[in-house]
Length: 141
Image 1 (cartoon, rainbow, N blue to C red):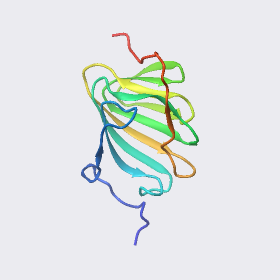
Image 2: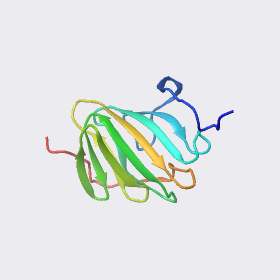
Image 3: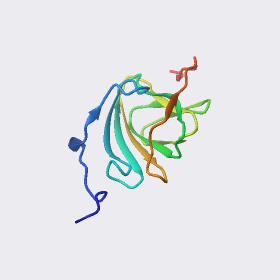
């Protein structure tokens, strides 16, 4: 019998999660998530994001993980620390979990983002502390 993390997960096998705190306009489809979710140390989620939606600026308290977001479709403005960057399709955003990060979809096209997280202890998500400031992610359109 194969190990539990040796498997195939099709999109239709995922459960859509909506109304997640700090994730406006996102429908998240989790494929796997650490030891309790079918892998040793990896988080994989496909995020379907409405125009104007995204992940509010935050950092993760008590988490030692790296996050990577691969933008498949759409266009976003990403925040890393206090800097903003425009990201186009096939672009990769990489954040350490203890650095303020987030992004917002810009324009009229929804976005598809493949979210990957990895941590040595298998816990690649949680402990989110959302930043309450007046800085809004924007773009010059």
